[in-house]
Every structure is written in C-alpha cells, then in structure tokens.
Length: 221
Length: 219
Picture (cartoon, rainbow over the protein chains, first blue to last red):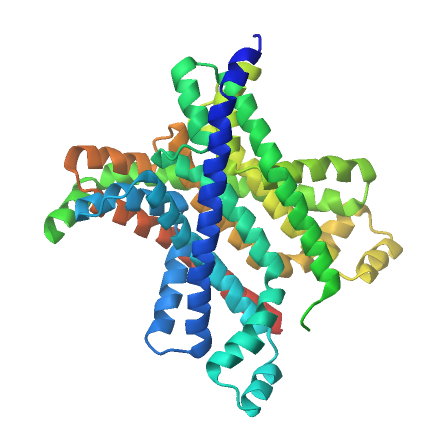
C-alpha cells in the first residue's frame, strides 16, 4: 500500500500539540510527584507517629496497582461519589498518586544511604531537626538518589501514554482518533512511532550517560 | 449498599473469574517467556561477542525507551498491515509483554552474571568445562541469588502492565468489570474490586522480593 505523505503531513499540527500535551502532563506530574515525595520523606525522616505508617500504606498501595486502574478509579468511579474531574485532571492526579510513591521510595533509599555519623554530627553541633534535614540529609540524599530520580522522571514521561485511555489528547490518543476517523492506520502508526523514538530514545540514552557519570563521580560519599 | 455490593460481586463471580483467568494468563505466559528470553539475553550479552552485543543493545534500547502501550498498538494495528498477520489481542499482549519483559529480565541476568568474580569463569574453563557447563553449573547458579529479588520486581511490573491489554480489546478482568458497571452502575465497587485484585496479585511478590533481598544481602 502507498504511504499517504500528504495526509501524514496534514496531521502534523495535531501531533505537535499532542507532544505538547504529553510533555505537559509528564512535567506537571513529575513536579507534583516530587512534592508528594519530599513531604513523605520529611515525614519518614522525622518519624511522626501516625503519619509514618500512613506513608507506608500509601506507598504499598500505589506501587502494587496498575496506573490504569488508579486512573479509571479517579475518572469513572469518583463521579459516583460526587467528584467529577476532567480527563486531564484525572491524569495528573493518578500520575501523582503513582509517581509520588515511586519517588518516595527513592528518596527514602537515598536518606537511608546517608551515613549515620553525618546525622549524629549534625545533632551534636546543635542543629534542629529541620536544619538537619535541609542542610545535611537532603543534599546528600538528593545526590545519592539522582540517577534513580532521573530514571523515574523518564518512566513517568513514558507512562503518560496510559492517560490516552481517558481521552487526554496526547500522542497515542491523537493516533487512535485519526485511525478511527480516516482509517489511515499505516501513516498514523508511522507518525506515532517516529515521534516516540524522537522523544523517548534520546531521553533514555541521556539517562544512561547520567548514570555512568554519577557512578564514577561518587558525589557525597 | 454493602450487602448488595457483596451480593453483586458474588453473583458476578463466574464472569469475573473468567476475566481474572485471562489477566493472569497473560501475566503468567509473559513471565515464563520473559524469563526464558531474559536468560538467553543475559548469557549472550555476557559472551562478549561484538555483533551480538550490538544487536541486543538496539533491542534493549528500543524496548526500554518506547512505552509498552506504543508497542501494543504497533503490534496490534501494525502487524496486520505490515506482514498480513492478524493476531488475537490476547496473544498480541503476551507477545509484547514477553518482548518487553525479556529486555528487563535480560538486563537483570546480565548484571547478576557480571557481578560474579572473574576467577570463577577462569577456574571453570581451566578444569575443561564447556561454555554450556560453565554457565549451567558455575555462573548461573551463583548469579541466581543476586538476580531473584529484582526478577520478582520485574514480574510484578509485568502483572501490572498486563492491565494495558484491555486497551487493545482483550476481554480481561477490567473489561468484564466495565461490562458489569454498564449493567449496574456500581463503578466504585467494581473499580475498588479491581484495585484490590491487582494489589493482592502484586503485593505478596514485592514483599517477598524485599524479604529475600534483605536476607541475602546480609549473609
């Protein structure tokens, strides 16, 4: 069959905005997930009595269920409870729910890796717990968990494809709707694959580079 | 609501069981194929043959970088037009998850093999073992401890990712649930059930992985 170049080109504006939506959902979700993770890390580090087990429960629930189910629950089940959210809002909330848990685990591992002596020295020179977290623990834990954090940022960007299931007009949703409208399966699959390769392969290679650099650098230890 | 909700789940149990069977079927088949493929990948990468390494690295990068859902669409919509094969959604999901899973398990196996001291390989070769014996009797058994916890994590990811099969029209547990919702409007109950179902399928595995990791790291 012939590749309809003209048709493929005519869809480009739609795909440009689709890439925009993908990046928008991805970066917002990364930001909100990071906020959730920092709060959880502080709770875990301070050892607040009731909140700490709650963080554990949240992390286990979010990490052991598929994003698709979390998304469907928010988008299709919450309206029955009187909470009606747009596809975009549902996507951000679901991705934050999942991403927050993953990033919490990474920060926790980073905090655990900070040597005890650092914390003890901090306490012995009279730092408050907040100062200790801000000036001693988090900077070191942040560097230690940097490769894993980057890996998860890219993971979150890739997971944005799943939110096509609730009609967020990102790359996959745009592909599917064009296929449904014009039956140009061949062209649309080619555009989808091309965009994904352009978007995700460089990220993946960059990640490999960062991992290698940080492994050799051994910052913070 | 609570009693009628449980009643609905009870009445729908045979239907749900069918969907659960299909979801777990995809996951289990993908786990088996990924493990086999991953071991082959890990050993091949470990041989250090240039061109094999190159080919496998391209495969790894593609399956790592491009999201699973994109692969699902490519295979499901693309295979019929590119090579004229039309495979059922179920087998399409098994195929894609296996290819993706094999790249993930493969990297775990490769990493575990690489962590074994070089003296082991040299000693094996020195007493005249052939490659197959070297891997089967010396290297892989030692690597098994190191790779088991991360392998289990890959398996839980496979189970979670099998949920995407519903998006290429597989009548899995999610689709069955959606059909029940269409009849009864019990969306909270059904999605709650699906949430619990996946949690019960994955949590024991990830807990086991954590326990094993802690135990084997200390010994």
